[in-house]
Image 1 (tube, rainbow, N blue to C red):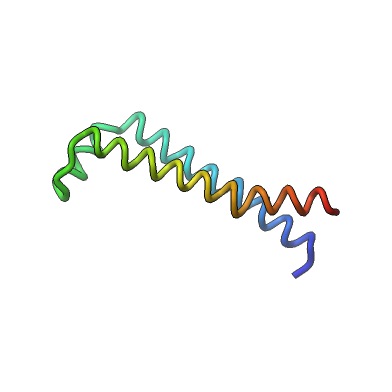
Image 2: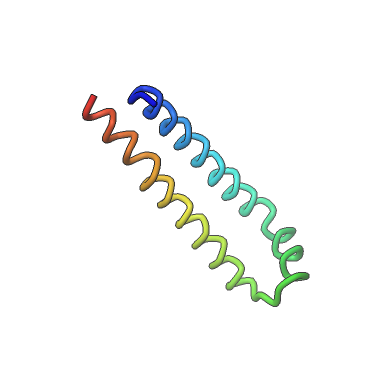
Length: 80
């Protein structure tokens, strides 16, 4: 695998992962009640706990995307 291929891979992985978290956020905002009713049938959750879990999940996903995709992509761009 060449540096150019790796750079392209990391760039597209960043775009795809940030698109996923954006769709997750928009779905959570616009369909919050539907998701809450759906999940509360399976698990005993308060609405506050449900919101906290989703928010924390989005934060960890976004941090992981930055840490494992964006930062290496930027480092490759700086070096080459």
